[in-house]
Length: 186
Image (cartoon, rainbow, N blue to C red; front, top):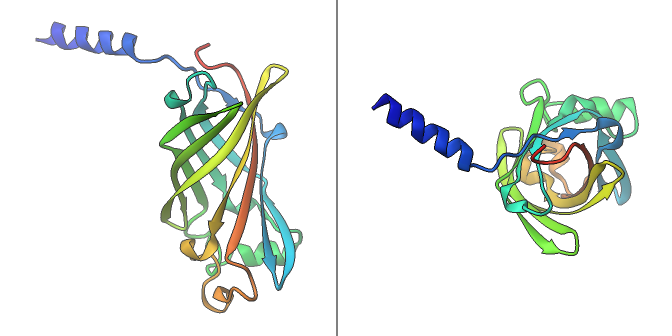
């Protein structure tokens, strides 16, 4: 019985696609966002994030990807805004220091365009999102550029007095560039 089980496990491991994890290149990657406060555009970013992924443009359906954002690394352009964004009414970094996205599916749209779907979790609240992106080779790296829209109030970002969408708009545009070193399967 043990030999049959061991043999089955070996056969399954040989049949499974073998993708080596690619490495995110932080110096060539970024996550930014834009929103309006009192009708004026505001841009921000997160300085620290990580990814565990394997993405092959030739086999997008086999993608494995999880992105983690260190919410303490938020930068909205100044120390006062950064401090406010970390408070309980916004990201509540003391209780929820990370946001995550896990791609549950990735499909090709043609012409180097793709679409990732999966849950984005912020402040313990998960919502499925769709993130269109492009993939192109840049030297030895693979560069993924994309973005998605979200409604901040669905994640309780801006509770209390900050829930007024005349003060801070509900719509937030997220843009990303992830540069990956390494090739899947190597």
